[in-house]
Image (cartoon, rainbow over all chains, first blue to last red; front, side, top):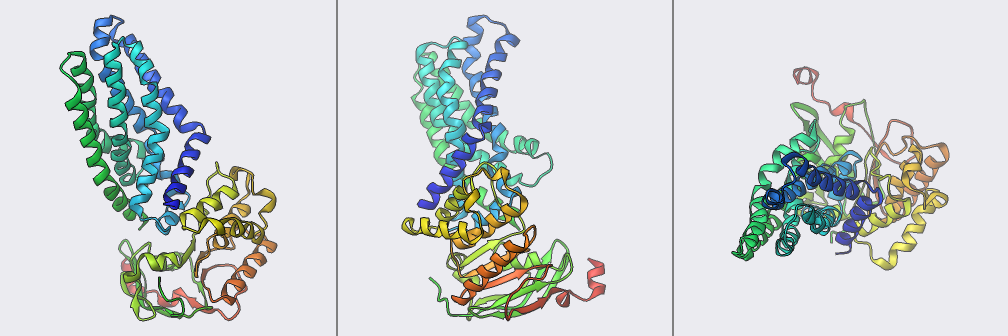
Length: 221
Length: 222
């Protein structure tokens, strides 16, 4: 347990200290959402209709932006060898790194999403649903992304390979995340969507650490 | 827990990287307190052998035994006995040497009461006291190397696997390393060192990997 917390704390302090990861991700998220009204026009009805989807897509892309660093730094400087020899099984190494990645990216994205929702003129009920859907949906983004990050280790143009691997897998959280907001705006209740999002999360939690660890073992060969 | 008094035995190990057979028929026996010095030309498989010993890669043939039991069966218990310093330092520019060693001690599940004395011993053993709280991005290549080696003292394990440990080290740091290795062996630890430069290891078994290269016509095919 101490080893798990130690790795979590180290990854988190690296992400926050270099200022890079969290700041860049948030900056990208805000800019991507702000760009949309310029493209599709400022009519409130239009923005209300597409707002939740835009915010969810921007959140996916922002999370993706930081994923290539998840294992790459440790792979490049040889620390991945040491992690493989630590007292933690590689599956838990993956889980600790995903948890730190979520706290450094998914959680801040969720926390600023209500402000961006105001920009696209969502009503109060929709904002609450958007916040909840991001809160339960973003951990799955980190977990699913870890598989792509581990598989693309050492590839040339890693960022692009990673996007191609991971973006299709992000479709389920996207559908149910944006769907939840739409359902709540239509007054039909978002509960079912949010529960499915939780299920996606649990499935990712149960499967992704094993898949990522297997890919990491391959990369260590 | 595995019994520490047994020999680490390699029987006819072979290693394949891609299509190329790097070495074959390699055997040795490493008792407690023993040292093994790996030499050989570039590409002769020194690093591969160390990675096999670290269970990071599987041998293409042969067996690695702890006493008489296969190492693979001991798994996590065997890995707990290992300290591996590869040719990369594994040092993060954003952390300080003290944080790097604390993290490593936590990762190796050292009890919290022992961490602080071990940490000070590690910093002193490799002369890092003065720079313990600098960010590692300010450290020179030799200082990073010393930090990588300080992990050996911060989280003690009974088998040290060292890949070119003396690269970038100055004379004084090298004698610190030799001193640390001698102390480690005196207390029953064992070391496997791959090195191009001369390093002072009393009564080490020398193993020249060129001697285990497969016959040249086969190598030429690969």
